[in-house]
Image (tube, rainbow, N blue to C red):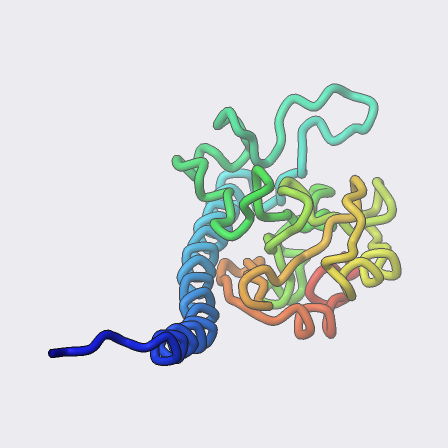
Length: 216
């Protein structure tokens, strides 16, 4: 007659399963996040391509983060809007492109480089392959905002750097958004020459002045 498992044998099997689960679940989670990161990078590429198309149509002048760009005037149009009427929407037909698949708690997952939002001409961007347009952002979209001066766009890197040094602790304050490596520590970035790539926050921050702002 075949005997059943003893209690000790069952406990051993359960323990083995628990150990395997503890080993494999993080691997599966990282694999899923890698897939989401690839989807996010595709979004950033599409937004960056849309920005290049916008530049071609508007004399190679970058768009404002919102229009009209006067703090006392009612905002009529943002660069991204949920109603499909954003400044880039003529070039992006799917509003889901603005939504990072890993940013579950915010409407939008990307920020626009606020330093470009002062009618900057593309020709004046000295190294377009090094100046970012879009980046994974914690605030929920519209602006990755480090300019301290509404007129010149001069950056306040001290404040932005303090936030960026510890994204998890960054306060959600208007005008102080934080690029965030939500994809297993990787942040997706789109640049002024039209390319997009993934990089670590450490690399982005190490060259923050050059990647965000030049004296144009």
